[in-house]
Length: 305
Image (cartoon, rainbow, N blue to C red; front, side):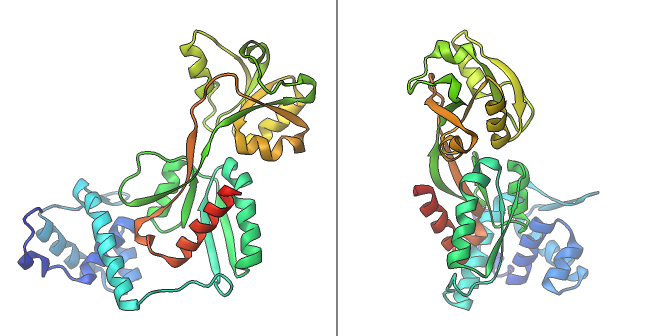
């Protein structure tokens, strides 16, 4: 495709590009035909032209639908940008007024972001965008990206890595860890490693494992802690710490926001645990979507507060 000529370029029109993006999103010709208000025969004809232009099958028929080839996946980002650029050029510069906006914002997030970012976002909507509502789904990373690509979500919050060019990543803040325990622990501001290892531990593990990043670090030092329970969510883990003599190592924002509510104290972790970036992820087709831009700016503001 490096020697793509004007003669080949003229064979591409907006309809077949929309068919291409529709097949990437829905994987079914019938859904693309319904979305674009064209016949399935027109979809088939557009796909034939696309295959001729790009000299690739692009979509393979499978029992579950049309499976994109590697070439189709590589074309997704540039074709999305081209279509969205044309859409903006024709429609003119869109504006977004949160005070008059109406609709539903759909997010994916696990409990760390659900309890530290989303409540303040709901408050922001109530004060500044009363016509907008939020639906949040607690789903895994892969499912969240698939839902964004399918147009089922506006964005996802959390820790994401190795994203394809089809997605835009907005880093919000760096997250590190604190240790939480009951007041009877009398946790020193600088908790010693010996004291840390003397206690049992509650681990937060959405996947149900009994070891996490802390255990990997300890193992590299020839050390081990005693994990007595693995829970899938952070707030239940804080409740478990309150009910036991255990400690838990949790993200700093969770500890800072909720330790007091669970009558827990906090201390710095006695070993270096790498921090990680919490980000907002959205699809590149929405790079210039004014509502998404406003939403991300509010998330940046909330993250700094």
